[in-house]
Image (cartoon, rainbow, N blue to C red):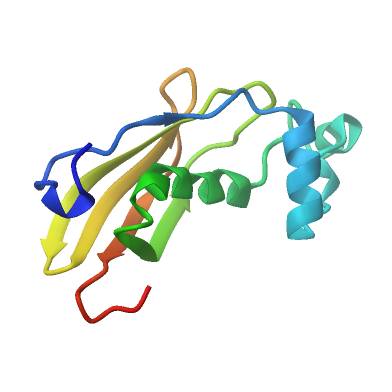
Length: 139
């Protein structure tokens, strides 16, 4: 596997496909995040809110983006990110995460990131700034 700093503009990281979204995933995320909005865990409440069913927390999807960079954490870290939520994630959706190198600025790499569902619909889109360690960094 290439080091992240060896990537060229236009290169992509290996895609990450998440397991189908489960109710248990969302219940655990609600507990971890403190976001107990019932549209994420209770069918009847989601329907009352006009949704076809419960939806994943947007931050659950965003947090999973870090999985794209897990194998590179010995080389650096995510310094910054920005995302836009583009669509809802429902139970049993299969989300695929992608990252493509957009810009290199010394030891900073800017990636376009994307999360799409099994139908190819974008559910999240944004940028991640990954900073590689230099000889002066302490790890």
